[in-house]
Length: 393
Image 1 (cartoon, rainbow, N blue to C red):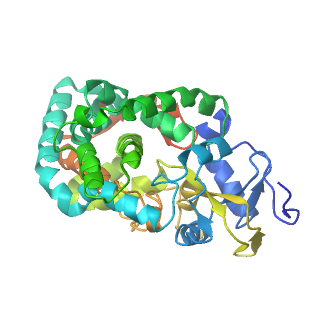
Image 2 (cartoon, helix red, strand yellow):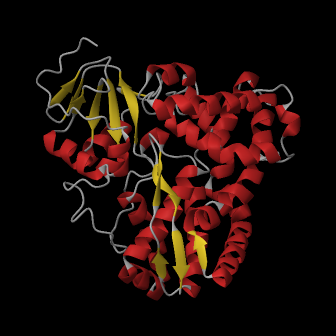
């Protein structure tokens, strides 16, 4: 790309390498130190890692556009064009209204009692065992049981959701070995959701069926229905699972903070916000810069692509005091863990409901978490755990 980035600070590191994925925070700090926008020659991208600048870009979709995709590679950006994630208004607003309908706070009130009852039953079962895995036994349970059934997929679809969700985020990074390997799962997911009889295979009354009913009413083109189905896979699974497991990891490492929440359960919402700030499940997405954009003192030429690093912004020293400290009393409700602006995560209310339901039971019954060695799930765009052994007291 022939663009004038000679006067822009440069950081010559592969942000999608295993080494960086295992410990990204020193690299984010370096990016913030270098400037408001930094050129990444390995990826042909500008990186924006400071809080104010990332939030401003997310709130300016006219310049920082999603219509040409949000991945760090051209192949997936071409494939995904016209989806909810890879679109701008007015198309985005129309698609978002359809998939967001069952995810609104009012709609979730109907399933709230069911989720809270399942959370209590799950925690009671795990407490009898004393030892369990915070990822596979705890964090995955609600998304893989209640939520997958609400989407309406049959057994094979539900059994494949985790694999498909992980692949969905892996291909949004670069086409490294991890991204290329994930393409097979993407094609499998597309084939499964694109079969002519997929509507009949969805449970009546499910979220998936509602998409096809919206097409019947003329609210969306019929050919977009399988595409909209995919929006329920990634957002309803990995992000919530990782955020839940990260909460347990943080409470295990900071027992004093768990004690504060036990003594005052009203801190549960702020604890969730703080965990989403400190260990953001989504590292960041890219945007196409539609016209010349000045980011503080850095000019990004139109036609460039910028990586908006939510996880870096959430640890920006300019925004947060002592940003690498876990503090459940911190007012972190304006974190960017769910994004911001028109593309703010559609499933954020569902994620909060699931995490809150689990914590409300845990604070009643668990004095402390003794955690074992966490195992990181390497993903190009997500940050979270594959496993976390826990013993509860």
